Image 1 (cartoon, rainbow, N blue to C red):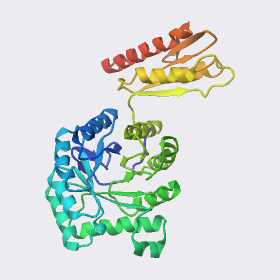
Image 2 (image 1 turned 60 degrees about the vertical axis):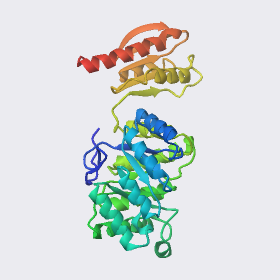
Image 3 (image 1 turned 180 degrees about the vertical axis):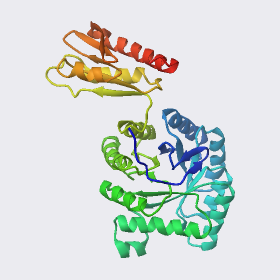
Image 4 (image 1 turned 45 degrees about the horizontal axis):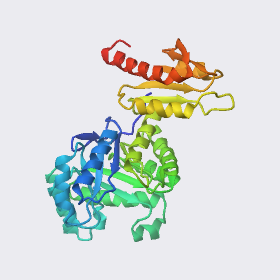
Length: 359
């Protein structure tokens, strides 16, 4: 599936290139105390293993700076320092190895301090993410525009122009909102005004279920229009779930060609097999699969055989027995209790065939 991506500049974040024609990068943020190096490092590594490309950590006081340096030395992925208001922390984060800085220059009141941060970031070749949040717009913009896309875009552009005047243009932009429609409209407006790479997200989206739905609608609709270069699914709770949700969003619209993609039926009164249990077992037993493989798990003979034939491999359950379809053809029939074992074995066989160039 081809997408006409919005033309944005290419930015390098610790070796991960975003913007231009580069892949959509997945981001998340640790929820451990940054100064607890062992816990935070373990979470960063877990996020990387789950498929996260870039990880952000909070830098909220001076004690975080040596911790950031240690985390950077241990991290398998680039680290973004999240700093608010304090230019000294921004400078310290850059000096201690941050691969990108997340700070709004407009929140630093002293122009000389803004210049110091921009100059330091430029000297270290560190990008700065400039963003607006619907919940923290500047008072003058609130008075002029109210809370909405125009005010959000004005805030982003104001901060971008501050950096540009200082000769700094290694910039990533974001316009996060908790309201999905406002978020989509804000990014569309920004996409028509600026060509910096965009970090997408529905901020404060909520818990796993509601937050994933809101993020999928907001992020997914923008990506389908070619807008967006990195994404974060902001969820309350375990950040590993953010990465899983982000990967599902990308895979569902064809922007991530990796791993097992499941097609499964919603079940009905005809179903004689535990489809949900089978899906979960297949996913759990194929976590190691890296090649893109579409797998169908269907509960009965009504739609099952047809849907299973559309996948690389699939099963259609029955009453005590079921069928396995591989590459559009009936592969075998088997007792119900053997279906998942056969399916998982053949998924691994397909990966081996792909890797050897036989498929």
